[in-house]
Each structure stands twice: as structure tokens, then as C-alpha cells.
Image (cartoon, rainbow, N blue to C red; front, side):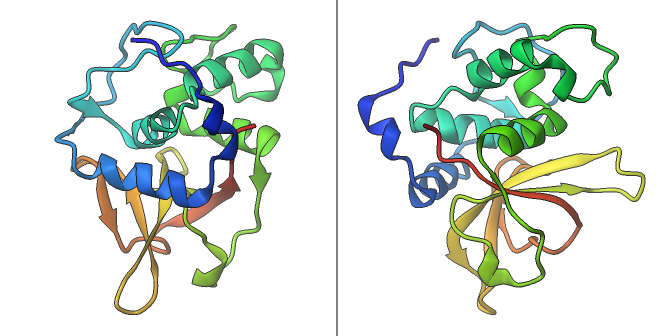
Length: 185
């Protein structure tokens, strides 16, 4: 399946991304991070499966932004800038966009890398946050800040941590590793 970038994609906002992410929470998705060979560009794993990165990929895709293509092209042109965690000697357009460390590099290179903060007001709708879920740092995670808040005023996060896309109060539950804004050009 291929997606074209509509003219209005130039006007992507954090609010639009937050709204697109919220739609993800209405989808029945089983957590499955297994490798899939997918059509490129614009390909996706089957709609009923996904991981945390798929929430991000699909939210941008709903706004006409194909991160699969953008990440692949940037990695192909700047491979040395990306992590070598998986022992790859070249890009893999089927999986590169589905790896949190690669998205962190991409958002740093092409968006805004923002300071990590314990102040909830610093996290705006559409911001992307990454975490390490374990102490060794070997379990990276990513989510999108929604436009909704908890009763205590904490920004809620749209993410998939294993139970399918959810909106939850979990912003400060794990060690943060990144805070980004990416409003595609």
C-alpha cells in the first residue's frame, strides 16, 4: 500500500499528530515485533500487529508523512550517523524505521531535540518521548504526547508497551532518553 504526501502535510502540527495518535488507541493491535518484509515505500506490517514504533509510524502516515521512506533515505545517505546495534553493514528498509534508536537519530537530525525535564508543562501535544524500560538500556520505547491530561494535570502518552496502542499516564514512569518535536517539512 502506498501513500502520497498531501499538500496540507506541510502544515502538520503537534495537535494534528496527537489526534492521529489517539485514533491508534481505537485499533485492535496485538503486540508483535517480529521481522516482516514489507512493501517500500509506504509499506506496513499487517494492521492488526505492531509495536511502539508502529504507533509513531502510523500516526505520521495518517498525516501523509512516510517515516519509513524518510528514515530509510536518511540512513542510506548518512549510515555512519545511525546506531550499529544490530550488526548491519547497510540499511534494511523493512525494519530500520521500526527501531527506536534509529528514530531517535532521525528526529535529532531532522526535528528538534528538546531537553529532558521533570516539568509536565514542557511536554506538548505531538511531542515524541523515548525511554529505556530496563536498567541495562536494552529495551527502548517511544510514545507520543497526547492532548489529554490526567486528573493531576499530567500529559497522557499514546504508546504500545505490549497491550496494543493505549493512552496512559506514564510519562515519568521510566528513564527518559529523548524528547523530540518533528513537524515534517
